[in-house]
Image (cartoon, rainbow, N blue to C red; front, side):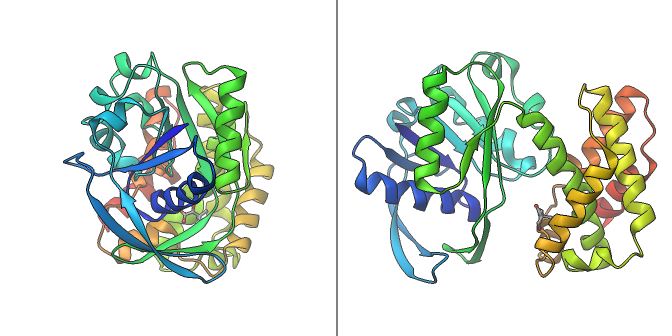
Length: 303
Ligand code: KPL
């Protein structure tokens, strides 16, 4: 199986290292990294600190056009607002059957891609809870063992292809599970991000600090709007269950700085357009009022 990773952020390089390790023991697995703009195979290195604390210098093998054409799956680990721009120059080099696995926070990127490309090939989503930090340029630290769900959002894969892909990813970086209801899981993850990310970014809090009671009314209102909008898309979510999931995640990641707060602190663009902004846009389309999500979208956008 040939896999190419698109994106050299923390999660992209975490998967690259894990698959590279697996490829060392399995000759039928090949992994390369897609470095743009040139797809020439250049030799570079990066430092990887495993969850155990062991650090090592690893080679980074870039994919050329031939490798792109031979790849079975392209794992795109880029920010939601980079998906379209990152995929556009790569798509013409992929063969018609290559599956694209999107791994990012937020929703709404699929509809930005050219339909003639996305209609034909398998498009998958991966949701991961692994903690990983890019501490310096080309130094990646695996900070939290997590779990990944993978599932098809468009196109087709045979049962054998689903099993083969899931097993390969699971051998590389466990636990990975195939799910037939990835869209529902995406909505649950979206709900978590709609609450934790903007509140921590706006009020400069660690994830656990949103649980003091001060935000309880606002959290319920954000989630009620999400349930309403999700329903218009055929997804039934339960507000009480969502609230519990949000609380559990905030508790489990109590001392973490959310990705949105990190982006804001670093002066980088945040993923707000694909998180609360996605709820705002869908709400407008469906004539559902979403004042809480709209306000958070506007406030974070203004930061
Ligand atoms: O996904 C996250 C993020 O920071 O983007 C959470 C779940 C909030 C963990 O920090």
